[in-house]
Length: 444
Image (cartoon, rainbow, N blue to C red; front, side, top):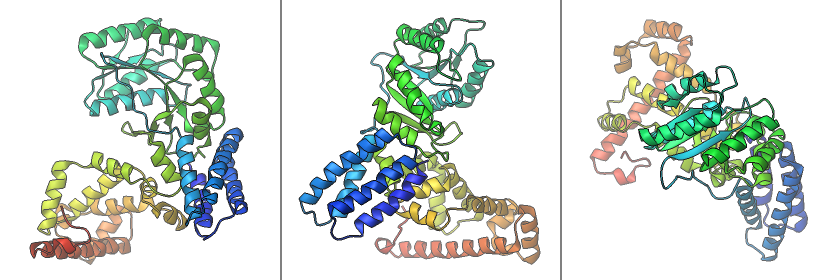
């Protein structure tokens, strides 16, 4: 997502910051490139024009002040306007003073509404809440069953009324059940359609009036492009949306539809779907996304992903092994799996300032290489993983055949592992001698 914007903005920023002096003509030329980049990313042309006009007005003012670094000043203005375009300050879910908090999810078929309901339930459950999923899509075949499957995967109960035909009665029954059962959040998976029609809107309006939700969230597909703008406008007119959940943000769509919807409707994005897995739902931070688009990275999100993926007990055990230089290929495989759980490597690289752009220019990250490394380790015996020095020529041939790789691949992994172990041993010895303060990466 936003890849075309990232690459175009990287060139624009280089041209701006590489000059000691900027004229209005230079700024105009850069902003023409900005406008073209936004249009190529499928941003609505009115939105792109308004964005460029705001940046130009602020940039001309910055030039008048005779800034010592006018290029960086203009980039700062672009960054601030991008944050505004993406919705401004981060907004979290509203929580009711008296439970349950009621969340109504709306959207068209194919946007991922039912899966998103499960993702949201799992996210809330991990944060100590007790959600209840509600199946009110009573017309689509197997819709109720689908939500039950998703609920089971998320470890969340699903409220169903067998043979029900009135979705509003089901929603009301679920709220009563939540009050009796101690659930503090009710997530209503409403009916969808292939397209917006009066019947759908009438049903959703009646649902909103009947249950008085604290949040009405539109689930929209990031791949929808410009169609998403008119669709979101119609939903907003009829339902007065409180927020958006954007799915498939990890896809290869240009992303302009998302930028356009936020600007046109004034409705913020609360969450973004970052993978097909149930844990692939993250809060949407406009400031962090703006930084990623401009190639400035997103270290905070990277840290949060790492914290969520790390088992504290396993981390403590790994630290003990590192200090005693007992690091094995089993430990290496475990760390590799934890990194892969954090998400695609390309997206992780984008979060490190400056690295994402460099990696793209170098051809990107080969995700398959990590799979090959894991396959090589999996093809070893338990003893070989603990004592890789036992792996002679015949064992290397066996491991290569078993992992579908070459002997050179096996040799490379073992060589890199030996180098890593030597470095870990040196670090450990330095720490024992009390030279920890001089280490570039102290163990802690």
